[in-house]
Length: 301
Image (cartoon, rainbow, N blue to C red; front, side, top):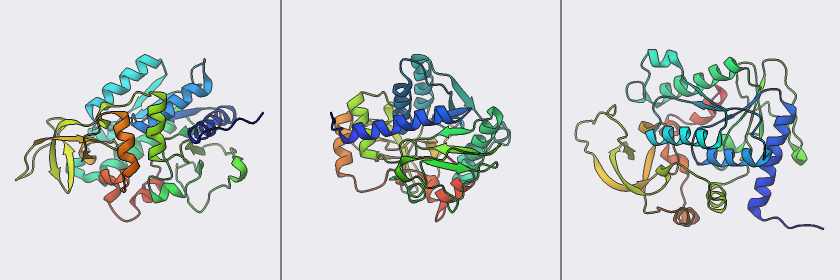
């Protein structure tokens, strides 16, 4: 008997299949856990894929030391609640050199504290496959990336050297030192993510919900003053405004949006009429033309 699946059920089934395929084909996979909404959905799918057992791989958080405080608290809370193996990696060289988004800019900060840090962690633990929460609808360089994204021994992505994925058949063969980045959410949209979070009642960081927060208007964006490390520029003032976040990263590089959506139902309703990309709230995507593709070639998420 044929059972008609809903749109979300088809996406869920595809993602679970990808998780199981990687677990069977690779010696040492890992899931990159950035604590955002996509990571939360990815974690939920991973737990479902192997239930009642725990996922047969650890979760890796690359800590830039500039994440929102609520993100770090949520990360630790979920690790304790679900009992998964959480690895946290910080680029200590970057910390020693005091690399930060204010003095060095988003480009240098992201490269040192995210890209280099991720490469360090993958090399340190010897992971040969890494799950990520990227989606094709987010950004143009991600739109052309395969679900199984091949990386050479230096973690470099070459858009011209991608493997065909006809009929959902994935080539998992790699040589020693090479690796694969795997994106189970490739075919999901931002709206799909929110509808699935609502359907499955998935816990997410409270920053996604509208609330009065202290923000500074800077470079056309509303930046949350999350701690005392953020110094005000001449003429800037801190205002309490009703805002939420569509995307989360390092707090000095992430813009909030004015919104009154304080429930999952309200967020889904807001997404139904949204006409801008969530990535417009990330300063790292404004560095230069093609900045995301350049970062991915260097080994970025």
